[in-house]
Image (cartoon, rainbow, N blue to C red; front, side, top):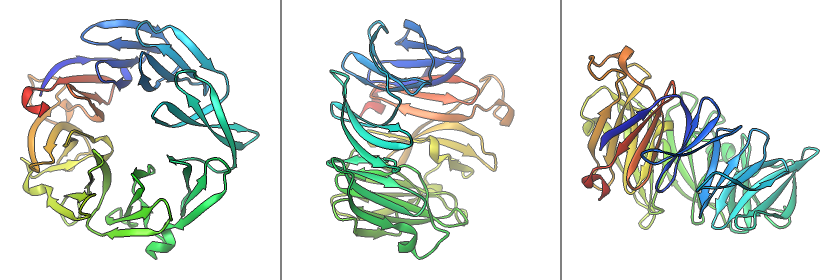
Length: 351
């Protein structure tokens, strides 16, 4: 990979298949592909997704707007207050509320109409799975039917672990097919392993003590976990969904420097490669973008982001990586302060 361009004063971005949508600090949305294609004044920092020739914007006023991606013209707007959940095929699933009573609904992307309201009381939706949805609180995960809101099953993960101080590492729920993966840490923030829940029954399908840390979905074939540092060791675990076997790699042995550690929340996965934000030493500044090949379990490339490349590498000269997004040809990295670094993949990166 090589650094193609850096753009300042960016507060957020959305990387599509072919271009980047940039949100500036001056509330302007820009469609960018080597040059500015169009600009639009906007009251949000959230682009939900792109579908056909449309983009869907979530405004600061809890409205969703459908814009023409070719010229940024407004096609249609949903006037209800809405909270988006996720997109599945040609539908966007959303929550709406009236007097603190929530409803789950779907929005057809082509017609852009809200349909299929189901009252769900004070429950909040975390994940849609076929004809059910998952809700989560501090102790339980519950499954309900989408059409009636009736409970299918309930799972108390704190009671299951028998350690009240165990907690979920991430607020997000990773579901692949009909399997829900939950990763835990103890009160000392050390990863303690994962369990798999069958989403049809709510029963524990498997315990995986070696699958420790932040979880990533690799092409619906593997679940990847990166741990924090425990006893000076940081690990990468790979759980194969076909064989249900888990192997663990000590990252200290494959990192080029012994003072590297992962900033987990900023990592991204794409086509069997894990894109990592790397911290150096005792600092919490993640200034290195590294690429780990999940087929060979080796670091195949890395780049140190320096504010002034002509000066030496030190804390004062390091950018801090906040966010990484990857598509088939580009890697986009947003650093603290609002600089977006656009990397072009080289031919070997595309394999």
